[in-house]
Image 1: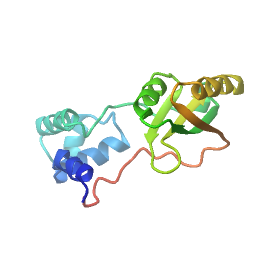
Image 2 (image 1 turned 30 degrees about the vertical axis):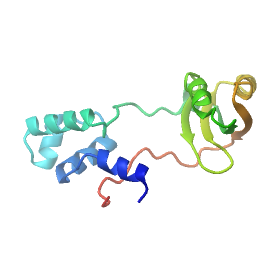
Image 3 (image 1 turned 45 degrees about the horizontal axis):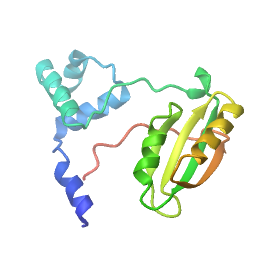
Length: 164
């Protein structure tokens, strides 16, 4: 096991059966009340509140949010960008991309491309303008931009009951 994986494992909080039940319930409905979760699990409502707070503080729960359909809120164009950076410029490029409002996912990758970016736009014109802006960021060696032509699957849920 390499050092990065070992370090990540050491940071992982231990999750018991109740934590896993809470995470499963909250992934289905983040607005579920503590009293309703208490009824479903058979645990005291104060225990439920404490556990949820602990999961938030430990970083297991990042936030509670509504998942929106970008096309129905005026962002019908999605782009996937594969970006290759100059050596030792990854951090600087990432920081420039991260502040762009339209970038919603930035993933560091192995292989030919260093970063994979998913962004949403209101028009082809705005997507093209952003594409040119991204290609001109100092440290960007290459940026392939692909227009997403359909949404096949978006799954924000994780199976927390699988053994780690």
